[in-house]
Length: 134
Image 1: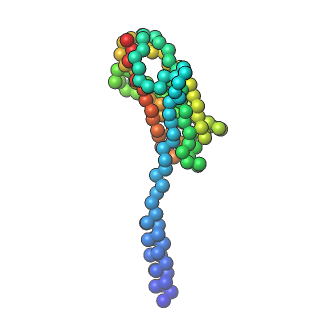
Image 2: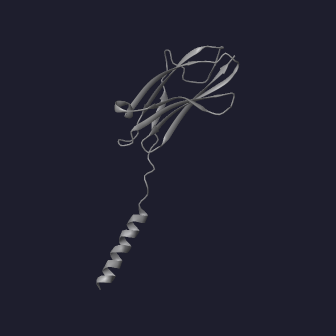
């Protein structure tokens, strides 16, 4: 009788464990700052122009703090290369604000920028903009 009861309990535990779904988590929040001095969308710029891109990012779940902010650039459809990688600590782990000054190259073409925030669980959220340099 004792072994039947043990087997019943074990089956119940296995059923309960298998029915639980893993929490996939929510992506961290990231958005462009708008208005004033900020460029928040793709645009045409002159050779060597300087723009300012403002970023606002925040955690989307209490325990999933922000860990990393990264900016990468690619030229004319080429490979992305990280140009800024920042570890977020302290209050930045809850909410991050940053202004990035970008100077367009002195050659006509396209420059694509990816702005990525990564949380504690490794979940990434990315926004992008493209400069067409003429």
